[in-house]
Length: 151
Image 1 (cartoon, rainbow, N blue to C red):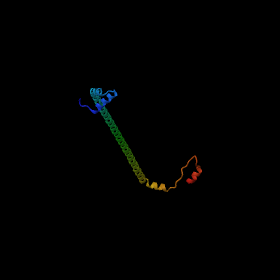
Image 2: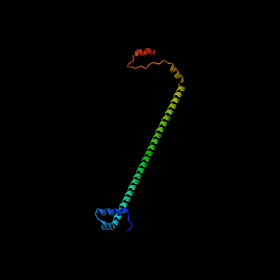
Image 3: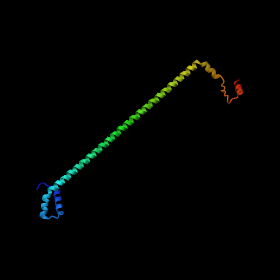
Image 4: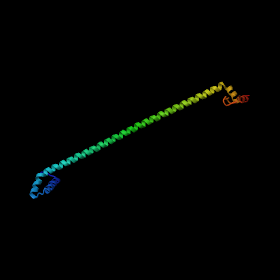
């Protein structure tokens, strides 16, 4: 008898008993059919190995997909952060430009006031000393009252 595994011999013996074979018939059945059972067991083992390899490959592919998804998400997050930083930079630049423009206008206004004060210095002082007269409104004011206040 060739090299056989115990499980194939056991399987052949169990099958012979199920067929209700006894002594010599059982021995003959085992001797004839044990290689078939050994081959069947080997096929089952190879099938299980292939199944395990497929499952391992499937798991590896799933892990790869998950890693790719994580990398894509990280890239998207990175791009989003870069856009947010760019927007903040633009907003800050606009704010600073606005502040600069306001300061320029303020300086220009002060210069105009200074030049106005220099050219009309005496007029400005004399205007300050004059009494203020309310503006005449034709709809609500009476002409006689306004003239009396004017005098």
